[in-house]
Image 1: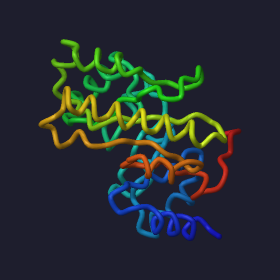
Image 2: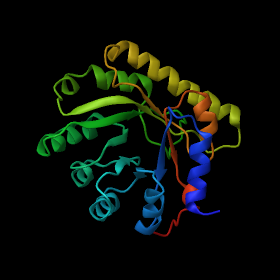
Image 3: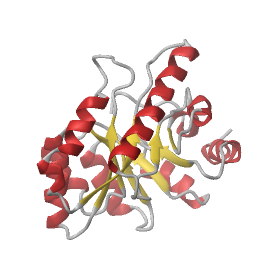
Length: 224
């Protein structure tokens, strides 16, 4: 099956209230256009310069999501156009996003990345660290970022029970932060969890966004 067939099957499988982010990192513009021309307009990238370069040549009605680890010196590349930044894992990064949002005269939507896998290779905040960020005077002073929910990456494991526990943990953290900080904010509504290997499980546990790459585009070229 081809790329278009793949995404059609996935879109038919997932509920309408779950947003599908087609993860196009390392993939050529030709592949992305094939998906775009089939009617899908939400894509995810994890390298700021690559995302900037693709945005320059792709149709302007695409909703671009940044799903990787974001360094402060790279925020400027995506700030003019990015729809949602999934991986905010520090006050320093959020401050830079706010700064660049001011520069571009816009408000940038963000998700707080929560560490649910507890692996050294994964980024994210623990729940108490997220709470500390949201309680900080620095965060209260920010007017050009909007926190819309949480994001997490499950462990690389064949143990589905472990993955399910991690997804449950993220959903619980979402509810706690919602109740404590965003009870009156309808915009705080997103739980981004689930990738090609575990998105069905993530949806069962309350995901509102799934980030799917290889099941749509095929395996990534890690040499790029």
